[in-house]
Length: 421
Image (tube, rainbow, N blue to C red; front, side, top):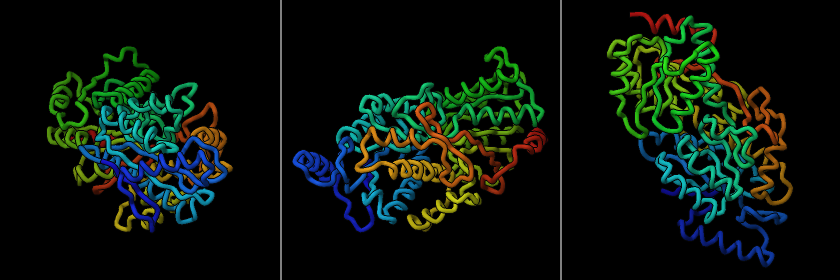
């Protein structure tokens, strides 16, 4: 599936026609034509800046991709309403990968080699990201703000073309494990892990084990670890293993998509398991809450953005206004806010480029941002050695069918409620 979003007032072109226009303008540029969609040139001006996205728009994790795209579009249209970037309007080409690496890779080739996008933004998922980063590096094209906290995108030193907005899964799992053990009174043996069987689950597992080792874990085999297959709801075997474990856990750190995680939580709660269920931000808080409803379980999600509905930071208020302008009926969500913040950061870098942006100049501009605040009320940083802007983790808890802000200092109350019969 392919979606092209054109600036307001312009007609959406069929796929083939749009692609032909790219190559036609590329040819015209060679003869001095003003304005171009071509990403690798350095003409003094450009009429349009084209960004690409390969994301999940179908299947069990579709809400994640749709929300990320919504947030990116809200940021893009904000810029377009203000006249674009130095007069150039922005356009997003979105391709559906179904959260499958085998579909993400050809999508990336399409975006970089045929659509000739300036940069790729907002890829959703670790396994799909792992499949496409080598292509971004090969084609020397920015892979910006993927919706994943995996370490594969956070190398030291960083890949030149890979940049992150969000905190890592290691930072998310580390924050919750520190809170559960330091403030909640749990021991290492009280924590179990439920993960997706792929690179995403592996990243969450690695972060959790690293955190537990900081608290004295000697052998990772001592940690109860159950798994399920990506793009399925087959969680029953994992739950059975956990229920029949010699030591019943008091907290389960979960690294999965919202549908299987919701099923696992409902089945576990129905079976009498009273624990704190923790999910990392990728789970998708809004669809998870919708699946769980008013289930009286202790469910928390670590977040990498402030609360989208109640947050008072200026960029969160602007997000809500821009979301209403784009989709008046849309409900503010964590994933869309993440896409919006990422887009605003990218736009800030684009504003600093004199003349037409190129695939190299946008990377240089991001590394040149240094310390900055996009409106969060706290400093972020990007530079040649720092390709992850934010390291902040917020905590939310399920209350009355939605995830609301929850203070880290009160984690012990969740543990006590989760342990109650």
